[in-house]
Amino acid sequence: MDWLLKDLAVTVPCTRHIVLLSADGLCMAQWGADKDTADRLAAASSGLKSLAQSVAAELPHSEGGVRMVVLEVDGGFFYLMAAAANSYLAVTADEGVDAGLMSQRMRDLVIRIGDHLASPPRAPEQAP
Image 1 (spheres, rainbow, N blue to C red):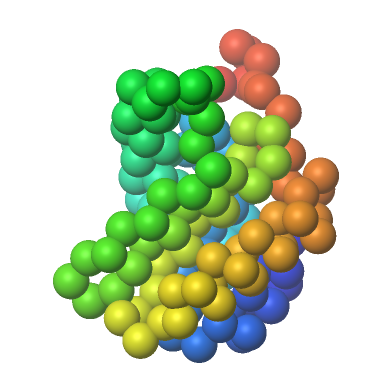
Image 2 (image 1 turned 120 degrees about the vertical axis):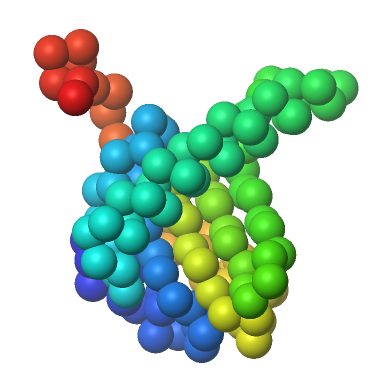
């Protein structure tokens, strides 16, 4: 899976890290990050997804689903996109990134390999 993430990074200049994570914050694949960084990004992404779901639930006609979260912070951007059942794609990028290109390439990746990105729910005996 890592090579697919690398393809995203190579085609969008200024990409720093890419993490594929389960809905509960488990890093399933990564590019551009060491294991500790990828694990921290996965955990933070899971928390942001939960916060975004709380906000979405307050919107009329919303079922609370989150498709994409974008944060602009000092030094760059953070993107979080629903990838497939119970999985998300998280990307960090420098300030010079083309925001539209990043969103498009993330969406293209999710559409192209979405079924392979699914993370089945873990059984209680598999939970850490």
